[in-house]
Amino acid sequence: MKMLMNGCWTDSSDGKVQNVVNPATGAVIDTVPCATREDVTKAIDIAAEAQKPWAAIPVRERCKLLRKFAKNVVERRMELGEILTKETGKPYIAESVWEFDSVAYVFEGACEIAMHHYGKTLPIATEPGYDTDIQFTMNEPLGVIACIIPYNFPAALWSFKVAAALAAGNAVVIKAPSYDPLTVLTLTDMLVEAGIPGGLVNCLTGKGSLVGDWIVDDPRIASVNFTGSAETGISIAKTAAKHLTGYQFELGGNDPFIVCADGDLELALKEAGDKARNAGQCCSAAKRFLIHNSLKETFCKRLVDEYLKPLVLGDPFDKKTTMGPVISEQAAKKIISQIDLTVQQGATVYYGGRRNGAFVEPTGLVDVTPDMDIMKNMEVFGPVWPVIGFDTVEEAIELANMTDYGLSSGVFTRDMKTAAKFCRGIKAGYVTVNGSGGFRAAELPFGGGKKLTGNSRESLMTLMDEVTQKKSVILRYILEE
Image 1 (cartoon, rainbow, N blue to C red):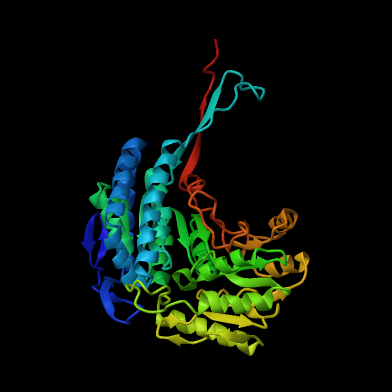
Image 2: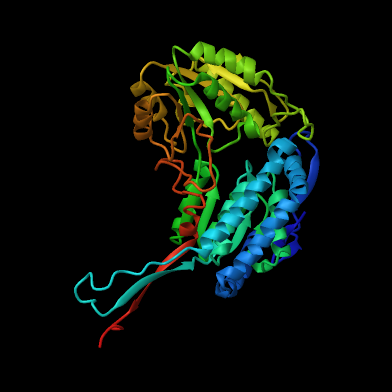
């Protein structure tokens, strides 16, 4: 597959390509171009030219095209799910096909919000000297937005970044994820098929540290929307600062999953088992399991017997498979190295701990202590359940907050006063009561609690604010007799 620029499939200017590998089999399933800096500049040229006439089109007409796209996604969800499974290893029916329902929902929602994204009229004569003026605000698109897509939920997160941007009248330059670019390329092409002008949706492929940096280093980029690691986010922010380019980041997390002594253990186990979704490769997911000492032994035993042992690793197209591989063998090796480090620091593997190619066994760790890296800033992006005990609410809150990340959190308790203490005390973007931090609703603001998790609040509720700017308009002396 090639890159998409101005509605046309395009090779890189130097002809270089990189392989796309099926992580479940290790087989090369396609190649994509390695974009050059010349390609990046050309894509931004095209986007900047296309954006102005697009912004001039009435929002209702823009949304007609975007809704047509959403309808086509639903109709082609099985085909799209097959592409996604081949390049990510997600179980086909259980996870890949579902992701396109999310894509369609986000596009439909973005259209609804764009149609009702109102400006404000200020009350007349509130400030002395302006009694005969009318003052109001209107929302305008930013211009060209860079959308840098992660590998874990490429379709869903592509939709959050692209849908509102286009509905608001922006153009986008998309950097597809290096490991799994095919789904993003296909979706972007479907936008063109639905009638979106090709110059608005240029999609580049290649190494993120090069292509992404080249995109951000262009002063014509009005804003950068990035989901990925904190390290990469910091690098992008440094480049963006050269041009005072705005950015919206959703970065790493090390989310606590807290079960109090009075917590519903059945529910907690069910939610803990859900961490196997996408082989644990989720930004917002339980990554540190803080279990009251009175429940810890029972929790660990039942987690293994009822949820980890029954997991079936294998062919993602087999209906019996319940957990696929992680995105690559390299990623699997990193997870194993993180498990090994935690063991070296004193933890014990009570289940799993091995890998086969890109498949990582679901792994339980006990004897975890507060001084270990896994309890602080080492985010394990895979199917690992590290368990640490606590005795008091105050101790649990302290453990929850001992990381520089602050994306999500979950707490299980039947006492709403206890729940309120956690909601107030945990430093994170959100707290789920009687649920995992893996909860995410498309409507609800989603992002970090002012830590290394970033500044975005990516959701239908807030997205339009992140892709538009307010212009103040003053009708001076208009009410003067």
